[in-house]
Amino acid sequence: MSDAPRVVLATRNKHKIDELRAILAATGVEVELLGVAEFPDLPDVAETGVTFAENALLKAVDVASRTGLPAIADDSGLCVDVLGGAPGIFSARWAGKHGEDRANLELLLAQLADIADEHRQAHFACAAALALPDGTRVVREGRIDGTLLHAPRGANGFGYDPIFLPDGYERTTAEMPADEKNAISHRTRAFQALAQDLAALR
Image 1 (cartoon, helix red, strand yellow):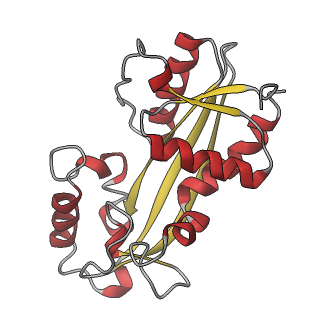
Image 2: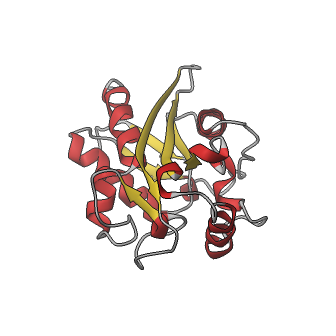
């Protein structure tokens, strides 16, 4: 793939890089995908935006400017209708500290304890951003709608997956095998939409 455009994914998470390679391969888009770990001097970018799109762009623009290569990044989270879209951009730190999945899940369930089934609609949202060194910026979004259960089900996935029941399914995203969940995920949908922009890089 030596003739394919080099693109940097703004993450140090190897799982995310492998996942995106699979998503792009399924769309037929050929890029040489690099992680920021291949650029040891790159600092982490603070996610100071107030929307998923702003945070994704912050990361992509910073990496593109520092590497001189096209860069892509994403930001995502759970949006609960009855909470006005929260946790939203605070999904990963809803209980206070970043990445404490169990605490985040338990806090959200406590906040929704008295909410009836018919009012427990929610969706996972993802914004995927592409930034080029010439200043070009593109954001594509994906979402998956569903409802929230009263108790966790399933051991797969992470975050709020054990209580998220996608519309039209009888299993939570934590009860689905990874390939089934990824096929319908908000992240996959956002990056599939971005694939058309990556295809234009040649």
